[in-house]
Image (tube, rainbow, N blue to C red):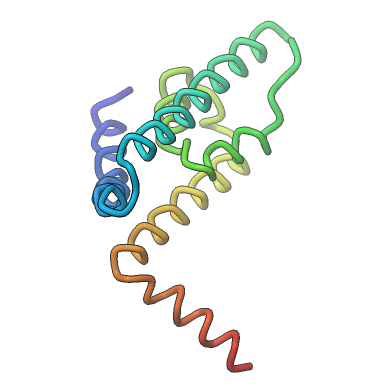
Length: 129
């Protein structure tokens, strides 16, 4: 991964890291860390397998599966895998969905750190109608 990619990933991990530290006060940090590591490992390995399958003309992993793993927390590993394997980096529709998932995570972590103010506003506006 390039230096700029590493810096971007580090920047993207600031909010999640702070939020996960806060969560560790409410939940067992070993469970949190175990979950993140498991999802990340599965995501990274599936990207690696899909790249190898793409090169050899074998069965491919559905994009929806890759996006699902990103959505449940494997987006950081997906970011690294995309750059390490040069996989799925030039497909615009895939990248648009990937970055939407990253943005969703950033917004959710930010909102969590603010005490769910945005989420509460959304719920309040929906219940008033």
